[in-house]
Image (tube, rainbow, N blue to C red; front, side):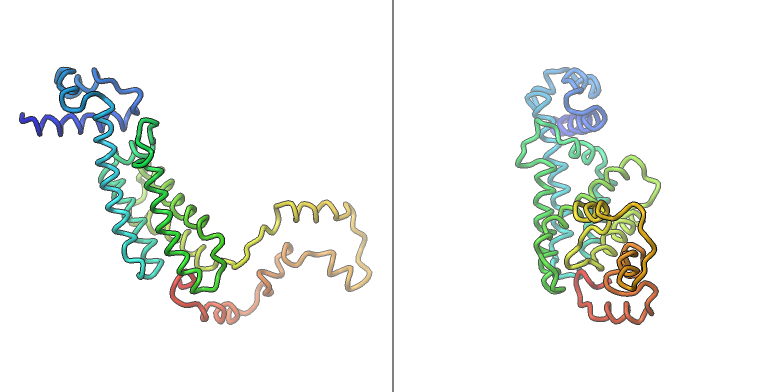
Length: 262
């Protein structure tokens, strides 16, 4: 076996052990034993466990960075296509580099913070933020919450990918469709100024002001106050529940390309 082949062998062995047991639980002795070499060989190639771990993490990071950057490169594409492409890019990486992904999500303290998984996700979130910012402006939506929506989209995809890495009962394409279904159908119907309808300080204070036993309403004003039309399900976002679908159709017919387009 050549020196290069031996190095690659040690990287593969180390990747498998780190993915299974974590950085702290793996020793140089175990790496050498699994590779059927002596400890000095490991030190010769990597200077120790830390050096081997750094190489394993660096390779995984490079592969994932290339995949995600490529999926976000064409920012002029339809936003839904970008969401689909990015979800598939991450799931493909998990499928092809499962051990590398498992190591990255552990994010060992020994990892260089500037090249860590969390740092990469931060960079990805910034790119998603730029794309969302443009789409929100086209839809005349407030951009104040864009950074939060970007984090939500990235978190949704990454944590779902982590779950799928150990439970692959759905295909890669099917899971990507699930992710896009939730992310896109939520994004395409965003409210400009969302509020909590039932929870939160304002709603709880309103509940506390309500008498425990309300007398039967005697006037139209009392009857109107007795039933909260939103909470009672009669009014949804300013329209009567059960209103003819033409109203909804007219609303969505004004949507342009971008977040609001399904």
